[in-house]
Structure formats: C-alpha cells, structure tokens
Image 1: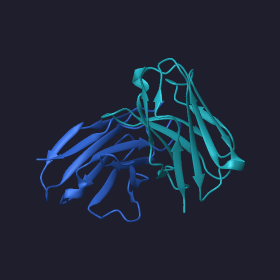
Image 2: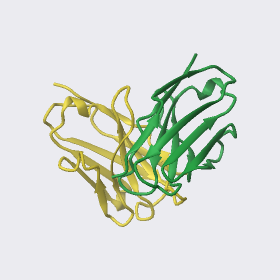
Image 3: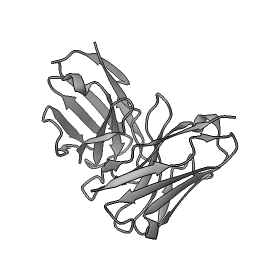
Image 4: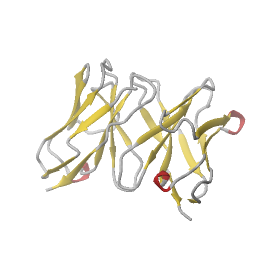
Length: 119
Length: 107
C-alpha cells in the first residue's frame, strides 16, 4: 500500500528556512519519482519540484533560487528545503508520487502539511 | 515551460445538470493531460489521465476528451459529491504545471 506523509514545522518566521520531510512506504524511492506541490489558502496548486527515481532533481523556475530537494533512500524520505520564506509562502505543502502510466499521473498524495509564515 | 489555462475559474450548476471544464495548453501535449478533483480540506484526487482514461473507482459520469492543445472534462448528471475544485495538469514534461483550477459550486 503506497503511502506518503509530510512532516515539518507548522510555523516559520519570515526570512527563515523551511524544512519538510516526506516519508514514504509501499514503494522504493529508487523506482518512482516524488514531487512537491503547494497550495496557498484558497488558491490553486503549484508544482514546486521533483526528486526523480535516479536521484535527479528539477525545480520550478520561479522557486529554483530558494529551493532544494534531496532524499535518503535508506530511510525512504524525501526532503524539501526552501530559504528566505515570505508570507506568500504560507501554504499547504504536499508530497506526491507519480505512476508509470501515460502522462505519469500523480496517483498518490500525502495528506499535506500547513506551513504558516509569520512572526 | 508549458502553460495550462483552465476555464471557467468558477461555475455554478444544479444537481442533475451536465458541465464542461476546458483546459488549454500553450503547446501540443499529445494527449498527456491529467485531471484532478479536490474537495475542501482534502488532497487532490486523480480523476483522468492520458486525457481520456478514467482512473479506477471514478464514476463513469466523468469523461475527458481532447487532443493537441485543447482538452475538456465533462461531468454528466452532477451529483452532490461532485461540487469541488478541478485542476488540469501537463503530463508531458517537467515542470508539471497545473491549470489555475475551476471551482464547481451548487446553484
């Protein structure tokens, strides 16, 4: 059974760094890619970046200068770090896994974790 | 990057009606289009992939169509549980951009 679960601080101060962990089960990080998607309150979905199964990363160009995604395959964890946080980074952050079908749909999602940027 | 433009941004309809949501890609995505449904307080759920392939467990009143740059999601005979937000996504290439979303509300 495929599962993903996000964890991290619920509150981050402006200008600080956000660190989130996505812990997965039911599959290997060396077989599937994991993506990060965020959603500001009341707004749409924004694709942030992904950790490919081969260890390659790709970032949304709008976030690239602030964002880093890494992993620990032995712990089945994918990490997101984003620096210089501002209030507009307040959002629910999801990790999600694609599936090996045409168009690589995001078939599995974590429950999401709300991150509030505030002093 | 491929841009995805969804319309309308919001839509009011009644139970039993049919509605259509459209998604326009900035370039040909060769049918590599994904639709998600999201209910308040929940994670997005996969509805349709490959533009037309219904995910297991999704009712047949949902259907997808389209090709090249233009795609549609149709919901026939709306049920109370269908009132939610819907998003399209580029499935062809990274970055995996989403459309802006369509909020389907009860009239």
